[in-house]
Image (tube, rainbow, N blue to C red):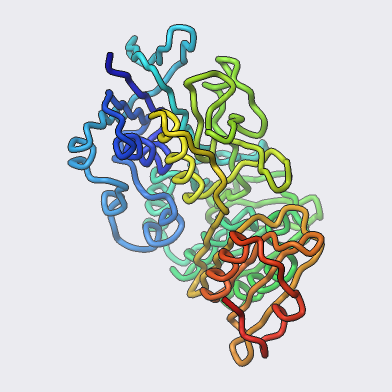
Amino acid sequence: MSKTAVIIGASHAGVNCAFALRKEGFEGKIQLIESTDLLPYHRPPLSKSFLNEDKDIADYCLKSAEAYAEAKVELLLGRRVLHIDSQHHEVHLEGNHSIHYDYLVLATGASAVIPALPGMTVGEGIFPLRSAEDTLAIKSFLNAKSQLEVVVLGGGYIGLEMAASLRKMGHQITLLEREKRILARVAAAETSSFFTALHQESGVKIHTGQNISNIEHLHDGRYQLDSDTGDSFVADMVIVGVGVSPNTALAQNIGLTIENGILVDAHCETSTPDIFAIGDCASFIHQPSSKVIRLESVQNAVDQAKIAAANITGNPAVYNSIPWFWSDQYETKLQIAGLNHGYDQVVHRIEKEQPQKQAVWYFKEGKLLAVDAINHAKAYVLGTRYLKEARQLHPDELANPEIPLKK
């Protein structure tokens, strides 16, 4: 009897899983459920080209409508899942409709964290950025006014990318970060310092150590953000970029193990057989550190999609990819290979006569963990190779720009 695979969530993870199932030889029915009406699209451009260029979201589609039809992937747009009946293998949708599954893949993603602050009313000049709808709302607000004063909450990568894009559009930007430096939770001080200088040189005002406790709606339509430090900041628009939270409600309601996401094993299978989880919603044990982690990246979503598809089709595979990430800000490209969790040594390389070309190498007990390659494609490529080979490196040589990086 033909099997049915149902995938909930049609972003990078869900879409890639559907097509990977076909590539792996899955001949049964594939149903891909998405709560929005939009054809699935690329997420990274939301804070960059889609924000500051006059393009339609259709220009960023992951696949054409024809591609889904050719692959016999049934794309169910604008359909919200109410609950899952794991005992009877059914997914229940709005409209009193249910779908049977033999294999279920949860690719439910994550949602923007909205701090529970007095005056934090999303949609009235206060915007998160997680979806195309968010970016469209921001663009509509920007088009109605000019030369805005914008406060960006959060000094992580999404906040910095938004600050860069809005600054390039000519707006006045103030970035507020709760920690003592930007990127404090994800990068070494050397990387933070580089991007602090980059933004300040571009005219962005950065204030660290700022914990916003209240937002007041002023009579002129603007906002006053009050910090625990006693400082206040006034803005025409507020961008909330303080992080995301995995969408685990459906999984939690059927008793799946939840630990900073939907916990999966090396096969991307959850604690219930025949139910898999992939992408931003999924957590797993990172073997080098033995810690449960969750990765928010396109690469992780795509890699896990392929692993889940292989295991569903009876082609055993395990997830052991080396994570990689990127961030584009102004004309600067940051490429990251590996994970720097638990590092105890940082090696900072600045290329001779090319101060904008840098690499920050992370070590633990002499073993390379990761590299932040700033405008340095060679360091990224070689760093990825070093990690795959578990190569023993000499930190002093890496730091010395007089010594070429070795293949």
